[in-house]
Structures are given as C-alpha cells and as structure tokens.
Length: 288
Image 1 (cartoon, helix red, strand yellow):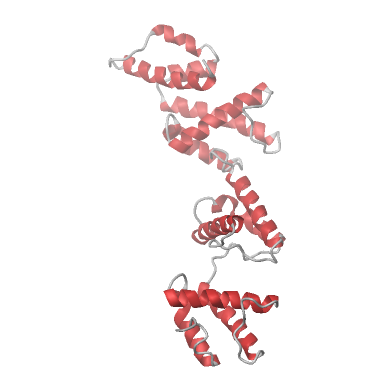
Image 2: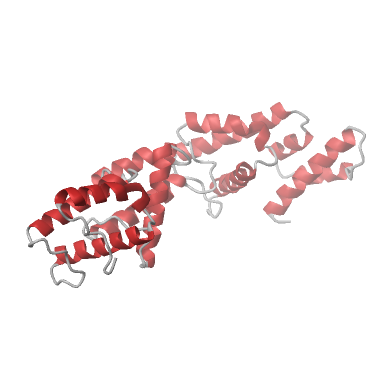
C-alpha cells in the first residue's frame, strides 16, 4: 500500500473505531491495529479520542518542520529528497497543505493553531499549496524584463500579442489585489514593492487613474498639434512620436464612436479640454 493510500485508509479506520466505541455500526476490527505499527506517532493518533491530542501531535510535528527549515535556510522539505527525514517531512507537509486547501480531516481542529505557530516562526505561507511569494516574485521578474525590452511600456490586457496580453491581465489582477490589500498581498506585497523600486518601476502596481492618464495624453496630443500647424498625427508616419500619438488618437476615436472602454468615464472631460484648446472635432471619426 502506497503512502497516500495508507494515510487515507488510516483516517477511514480511525473513524470506524470511533463509531465502534460509540456502539454504532462500523467495520472496525481489532486486527486493524497492525496498520499502526509503522511508528508510535501514528498509533497514538489512531488510539486518540481527543481533539486536544490531535492538536498536540500536529503542533509537535510542525515544530519539527520549522526546526528543519530553520537549519536549512528556510528551505521547504521535499518529498522527493533522498534524505529520509526531509522526505517524511515533505510528504507530511504536502498532505497538510491539501487538508488546509480542502479544510478536511484534522484541519478544522488544529489548523488555526498551526497557522498561528507558522506566523510566529516566520513561515506564514508554508501551508499554502503553492509558495505564493515565489510565484509572485517570478511573475514580477517576467513583467519587468518585458517592460525593460519595450521602453518601460506597461503591458496591455487587450493587446493582440499573447505574451503582452497575459502579462497585462496578471498586472491588472495584481493591482486590484494591492488596492484592496487582499489575497496574497499581505504575504508578498512588501517584497514586490521593494523589487519594483529596485527595477525602476515603483508605481507599476498602483491602480491607474484612467481619467488622469487620458487627460495627460490629450495634453501631449494638443501640444504636438500646436507645433505642427494643428495637423492631427498620422498612424502611418515614419516618425515614432507622431505614429504613437496617431495610433492612440485612432483608438480614442473608436472608443468615442462606440462609447466603450473608458470613454463613458473620461470622455466628457476630454471633449471639454479639446474645445478649450481649439480642437473640438479631434475625437470624431471621419465622416462623423
């Protein structure tokens, strides 16, 4: 019987023994005790009727886990390790993470105590199925590398490029998490902000003020038009600045025409500014 099947059967038999002790129908047999000859801890768990005993056993195991991590630079034990001690700890940790995720088996009994202890020992996310900090930092590095290679541009969640679109979507989610201080931000937020500052993108996780961004872009557009005889920038220009402004203007005209995306939010202010600067029809599509 493999380890997982053994553990599952252990839970089943323990429940059956409880039913037997209470005079309820069960499949408990005294010979089932042989399954708990593997080690004393398992046997004590099987014989225990006390939630307190379960909690005490879980805490003792957690202390062993944290002592291992303390002596290995915070490393999480691997269940694939050739070292028997690490392998056993890793296997048990994997099962405990599953119990936490599904809130099953003994987790409703001792889970809160384990989380309290893990926080005290400095391993707040150790019982999460994935290492949230590690995943978040890896995604941030991927984001910053992309921005470095695209003139510090923030990736768009509506881009036709699959890589940019994926990064943009993840960034949008992360901004919401930061704004609401929810989910994993309490765990890895400070490290992400530190990394963002180090890489030169200190405000990248701030939720963008769409109205302010649109007005700032419009000011840039009108300044360009003022210096080019009031001509609207072309999307096919060989000049990088003009082409960029032209593409953005074309997109903004479509937003106005269809009244979609951010136009209902900032459209009236853009039209007011356009009128003030003398470009009343600049956001109209041709023929409109």
